[in-house]
Length: 350
Image 1 (cartoon, rainbow, N blue to C red):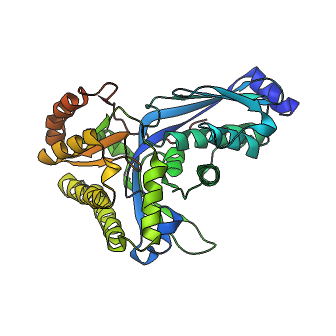
Image 2 (image 1 turned 90 degrees about the horizontal axis):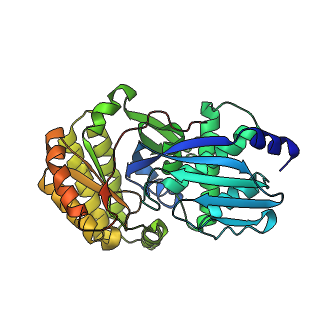
């Protein structure tokens, strides 16, 4: 790290935060799917949550990079020998991209570790923004939000070693309640953003939501890799087309505040995913989804499932009746709990 950068961090630690998300229609933002399915106009949907991930840059020994994050053992390596296949390898890869050393990266998240809420993507977005803040000293304009999201995605894909989507990074930089329409034109914009619920209605929408942490972490790349493998071998092509249609129907219904119709589309999308990959829900997840359906709500795993979180959507009265049922189910597993749900309207904050 140059003396100038070190001076900046020593004088005042640099802190940036970004929100996690819940989602619908995920995987369609992966290139493997969005190009072959382009004639069906694939889109994904997410809600940015007030569960934020904060990244701070602190000074550290010259030539070294240290990363500390809740739920992981802190790790420190020489700048030029930091492993990218480490559990915190994405953070080391971002530091390498910016040629930064002599820094301690501290990650603090208000969501449970590996909860399938996009926390690692939010951390990557916040870290990219923190380094840009120090190196380029530019305000976070629309251009910089897009740059941050796409750079964080590119680095995450390289480190993961499997195709990754972009919607988690977009939720982290923009916040809000949005549909992301994935474009296939070469040389043009990759996505088109559509606001589904305006900012002034975020508090109202939050009353129609529940979010449960199932008490066990997830491994998204396992299920994502299986979906990619299935798709490439021509399995479940019709089901993926149906997922596109159900996601678009969900977005349309939610934009009209038709929670009953949105919940129905949500449940049909999950049923298709379960047909392709039964392990997308564990025992706790299956019980939570079944109880949501019984209470006329929709329920879906976050991210690629396989553990982590389940979120529900429905009419306010139905959500209020579902909440104590979910609390009773979650009490059966240590660490499982209902999480506070609020919608983040700002996105990245530096």
